[in-house]
Amino acid sequence: MVHGEHNRSKNSGGFALIILGALLLFLAPQEVTTATGLGPIAWIAGIVIGSVGFYLKFFRWRKKG
Image (tube, rainbow, N blue to C red; front, side, top):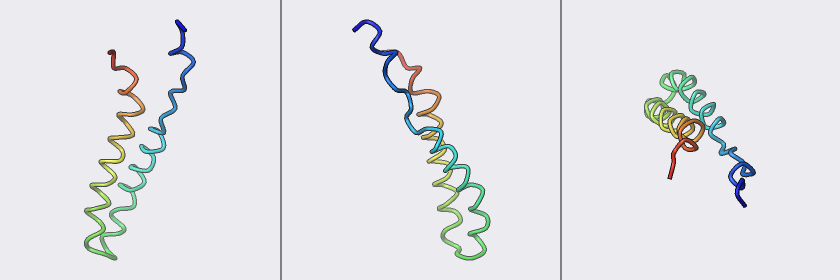
């Protein structure tokens, strides 16, 4: 089909990953006071998850080829 690409769903869940990463970055400073190891892990996880979500939402569909 010639226009089969238009019929595909482009919902990759990227927006949900961006929101999850932002929540981790927002909640991570509160975790530093209770458990010393969870704060930096939550910051790194928030950045990684948000970056993957940003890639899936905005850059994945613009690649040609």
